[in-house]
Image (tube, rainbow, N blue to C red):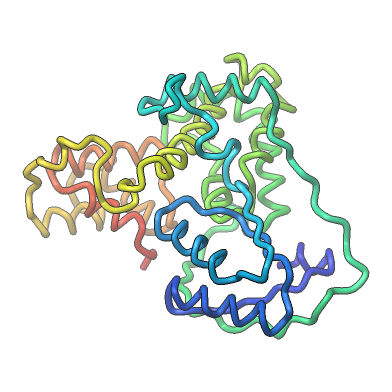
Length: 310
C-alpha cells in the first residue's frame, strides 16, 4: 500500500461474498467510475479462470487486458514436440531453460509517480479476513523488505542452496515463497536477481538448484491450466483414485496437530501451525507420511494445508 501511495495510485478495496458476487461488484464499480480499461493478472486455478472469463464477458464496454504476471512463461508456451503438456518435470525443465536462453522475460520497472491520482479512494475498510501474527525477522512484511531479502539470498545463499536445502535446521532456503504466493515479489524479479549474481545458473552453475525450484513452481501452474481436474480434487495419475484410503479421523488429527510421535513429522506440522509456513523438505516428509505411512487420503492433507491458520 505505501508503494502505491508513493506513486500517486489510489487503492480501492471492495469485498464480495463469492466469485459471482465479485463479478457483479466489479461491474458496478466500473459503471460508477466510468472505467474504460481493466488490467488484471491471471490466476490459473479453475474457479479463478471461470471468474475472469465471466468478468470479461460482463464488461462488454470495458477493454480488458490480462497478464501472466505470476509466472516466468505463460502456460501453453512450453510444450512437447507434439504440442502436448509435459507430464514429467525434467523434460519440462530442459525445454523451459531452452526458452529462457532464447530470451529472458522482461522485468518491467515500477511506473513513475503520478502528479495526482485520477480519483480519491475512500479509507480502507476493516477486512474480514483471517490474520495470523508473524515474525518479521523470518518473513518479509512489505515489498522493500522482500526485495532486500531476495538480494541477500541471491548474493550467496542461492549458490549454497543445493547443499543446504535438505536440512531444516539450517537457514538454507529463501523463505520467499509467501511473497511469491501473494505477489509481493514476481518470479521475474527472482530470475533476474539470481542471474545477476550467478550468470551460469542457466547452464547448471551456481544457483541452478534454486532456479529449478522456480521452474517447479511454473510446472505446477502450467499443469493446472492443461489439466483442470487437478483443481477439482482429482489425482494426476488416474489409477491412484482407486487407492483404498483409511478413514481414521484420530490419525488425521494427530498429523494435523503434530502429535504422531514421529519427531520430524511433528516438528514440521508444529512449524506450519505456528508460522503458516513449512520448510520445503519437511513438506515432502509430512505429505509422504500422511499418504504412505498413515495411508490417509491426500485430499485431507491438501485441505489442511489450504486452510487458514488458527
